[in-house]
Length: 153
Image 1 (cartoon, rainbow, N blue to C red):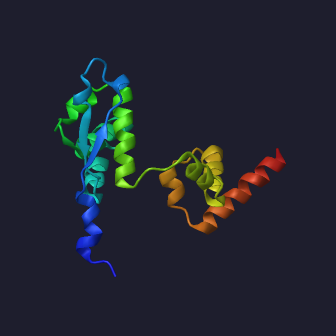
Image 2 (cartoon, rainbow, N blue to C red):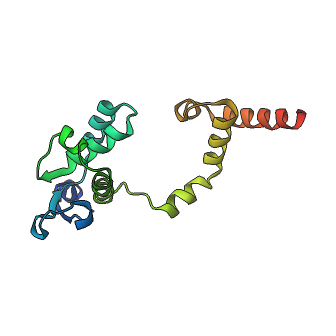
C-alpha cells in the first residue's frame, strides 16, 4: 500500500525541458532549458477561477504556475510567442498528467453519452454546463423529441 508521502512525491518533481531552437530565435544553445513542475489541483482551481472561460489566459496561467526556472509573471508569459506558449503548455499538461492524445479524444467522442450531448447542443443550442445538469431520463426524452421532430418535418 502506498503512503501519503509516496502519493504526493510526484507533485514535487521538477522536469528539465529543452526548448527547440526554432521557438527561441537567436538564443544561444546553452540557454534553452527551463524547469517545470506539475500543476496541482489547487493550481488548477486557482487558474479556473482567475481565467473564467478565457482559454488564452488559462494557457498563460498554467504555464506561469508550472514554470519554476525562470520565474515569470503572467504578463510576461502572455507576451511569449504563440508557438512557445503552446510548446510549454503541452509539456505542462504532460508532466501534470492531464495530456489527452488524439486517439483518446477520438475514442471519447465515440461514447454514446458524448454523442447525445453533441446532438442536444446542436438541436437546442445548449451549453455543456446545461447538458450536464440534465438527468439521464431528461437526456433520453430530449433525444427522442428531437428525433420525432426530425421525422415530422
